Length: 193
Image (tube, rainbow, N blue to C red; front, top):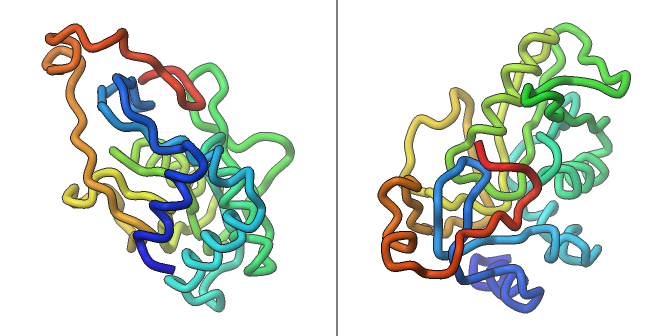
């Protein structure tokens, strides 16, 4: 599957939005990717997970983990196709945690899976939790990388199905705000940082 086919999935699902958006990082953007609209189609989720899996060797993975909520569907599908256990981290009172009775046996090698990455903050928080519980993150996979020119986001290898360079702005220096382009809306899964 090539990047144009993946981008077409987003466009066909109405998941590539244009407007004035507040990202999970708190930054503003004129484009937003709503992966949930793509991943609600099981055949799309299956194909995108297979694309991600092609970028990793399953022999090095013991378990798959995703930060909630964005990474849940694609992380579960990657784990299903790899036949590996799946867990997720989630925020409680603003702090990323491992809950719901999940545990990570000491030395477990985890594949971290996310839907869309811009700054990588949720993934880094997830990796901290994994390490605090005795696991070892070995690679990060994401369907979409919104900031392909960013370097050093993670201390493990990182691969993506599609790179889509989308300009983001600090809210204090957002041209969309200055130009009065609609109020900035937050269509994602959690409040801005």
